[in-house]
Length: 262
Image 1 (cartoon, rainbow, N blue to C red):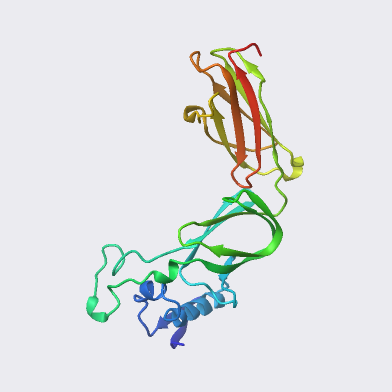
Image 2: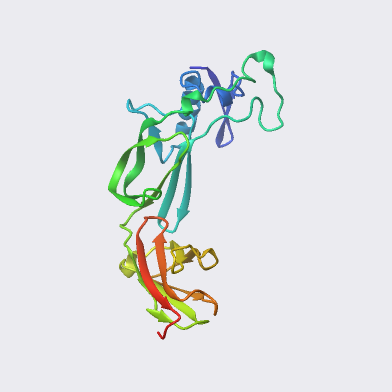
């Protein structure tokens, strides 16, 4: 472990590191060489009371290197993405200097990130977890066992309370040139209703996605409403409207007979 010099400065600390951190950008993608610097910085941050809220570990409980964890808070929910973070710059950062004579500024080795890795994701507490890409609930857990894929991120929704499903209310029939008024109702109790991002997709009678009528829709509360302004020359027949909660994968569908009396 590299030595450090620590001095008190006002109400804080000044820490002098007797090592160069610049090579870490290349060492971090090769398990092993990065460990001393990572352990040192982790210890310094822990001393300051800074701890990762989500840990990504291997089967032996050691930290998986070169994994990025992105978090986004949405109401009481927290969305967490876990994915490999390869080194793309052959030396320096962006337009920073390249120093090939030091032996590490060229020749990036991302091979350790090009194969699946079994991982354990530890959460800060027991939470209701939903696999966003897999569109399924994973239960109330504090630990997830999963696989980090080389090319596909893992995305989870974490919630302190269960997230209920959706109900879709749409007219069964609609005349030409009329607007369809759609309502999306949340089954949660009013006290635990959380903001929602819902994907609305509209399909014509031959099953083709009508992109101009489809979009993401945000609403808060128990009930959301949107309008779909069908055109006079839209194809008559049965149109389908599908909605999906982006956080949980919960979905609902309704059929609308266009070109007929409602």
